[in-house]
Image (cartoon, rainbow, N blue to C red; front, side, top):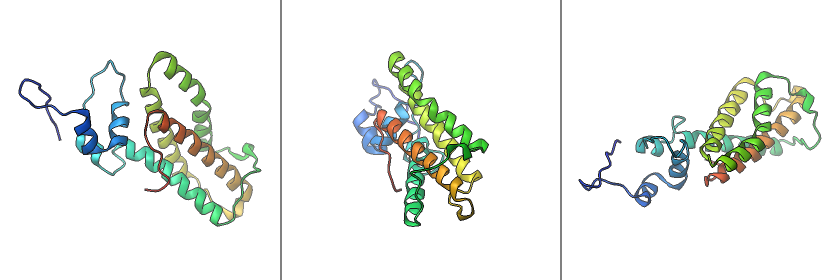
Length: 177
């Protein structure tokens, strides 16, 4: 839905109206997707949609997917307190590890330069890498118990990092969707 904003003609939405229409999480996330010095087209229909086209839904779904996998692993008796990270050799695993390793510096840069949209972009990148990993690798594999433990530990790290990044921009990290 395209709404042309014009104070003269009386066509304007307040942030409160927008928040009530699309929800707090969607509004905060979408408002933080661009630098404050660039133009922002806020697509209300996109922000309302519950599909992978909606970036906040896509990122929150990634977090919920991890929680579901970890719950399933726990219910199946998988323990991953002790694992061998050297078993994470697949491209999708390495890409996730590199992305996680970049988070502390990204947070420092975002704070020092006052560019919170970088954190929002990061959450989308993590979600995208997570979905690639999930589609490429079998996480719960009884025939490769040690690899499964390492992958579960990786997922736990992604969950923590993604949850922290979402909280930094004021967006909830749901465990179920």
